Length: 150
Image (cartoon, rainbow, N blue to C red):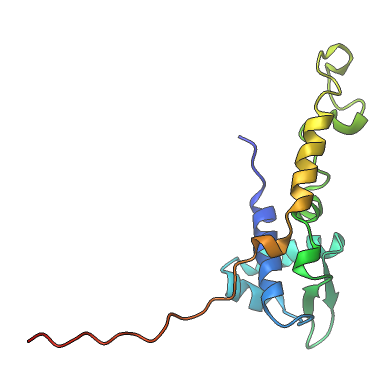
């Protein structure tokens, strides 16, 4: 089974949570951990990777934390995955990489994964975090009182 790591999943959750507040609001790791239920050390690790990928910016100091580098609608899922996992590549020999496979010289499908990889990358580039984010939670309407039983 092909599956993304939990860190990539957590990254989408954290970025979506960062996007819920007012645009440009700074949130710290402990607040994000409390809001998402993800352990604070994991939140800190993911935020560091996202900052390295240019998806969030950090602010130091007493009121420091992280904020989105751009709006959710401008962050494709492909960028999130690349920031956490590295380049999107289904096999070791994709995109012309040489020397990553012991049978590459005799492989009958060498280079044939490139179109598959490109299609997946394209699909992931078409979906943004705004598409993934849950709408703001709204409490249900006023509760109906039970009618008296006669």
